[in-house]
Length: 323
Image 1 (cartoon, helix red, strand yellow):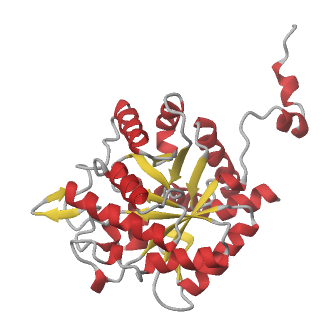
Image 2 (image 1 turned 45 degrees about the vertical axis):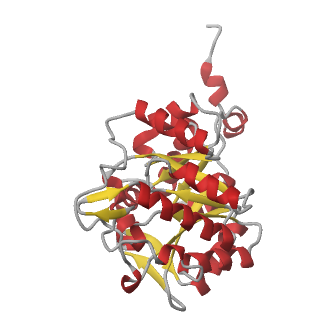
C-alpha cells in the first residue's frame, strides 16, 4: 500500500494543519432583535435562549459580541402595532426605533459593522414585505419606500443595508438613492436567493411579522428551483449589490455552492430561526450534542462557500471557537 489517507487524520494537530475550512468568529453576523422600552430582555418562546432587547441592554449585548470577535450585527426591530400601516411610514421615520438602534450600536462600538434589515413586514398591518393593493403585494411602489428606508438607515450610520424583501429592481433603486445622497461608502447586502421557506416561523414570532393573509410565494423564491437563484443573484450584483445572501442555509447548501461557482462577490448565508429551533429542541431532548452540532452545522455552511453566516448561534459558536 503506497497511499494511506488516514495518516492525515492521525492527531488533532495534523487534522488542524490540513483542514480545508476554517471557522472564526469574524465569519459570523449576529442578528439582534430590538424593542421599545427600558431594561427589557424578552426571551422568544420559539427560540429558546434568544432575546429581544431594549436599546439600553442592546449595548451590552453588542459589546459582548465584539469582545468575542463577532464583528457584524444585523438589526431587526419589533414595531409597535399603533405605528403599523400599509405605507411603511414608520420605516422612514428618522427617529424610529431602527434609526435609534443604529446610532446606539455605532456610538457604543464605532468599529462594529452594523447591517440593517430593509423590508416592510415589521411595519405592515398586513405582515407582508411590501405595500398591499387588494390581495396583491405591489412591486414598484414598495421599491420606492425601500429606497427611502435604506437612505434613512445610511443617514443614521448603517454600514450595510440588507434588503430582504425580494422585490424586483430594489437593489438598483437603493444604490441610486445612496449615490445621489453621497453615501458612497454604504454597502448593500442583498437577500438575492431568499426562498419561500417553512423555516422562518420562529423569526415571525420574534417580530410579530407573520403575513396576515396568504403567503409570500409571489415574491420569495420557489424552493424547487436552483437556476433561478443564479439569475436573481447576478441581477442583484449588476444592480450594485456588494454581498449576496442565500436564505435559509442548511437546507440550501447546494444553492450556496452553486452561487460560489458562478459569482465573485462575497456570499453570505442566513442560518435561520427554524434551523436554530430544531437544534435547540433536539438538544433539549438529549438527541444531539448541541455544541458539536453548532460547530458542524456552521462549518458545513462555510464549506459550501459562504464567507459570512448570519446565525443565532453567533455568540455560542464564538465562545466554543475561542475555547
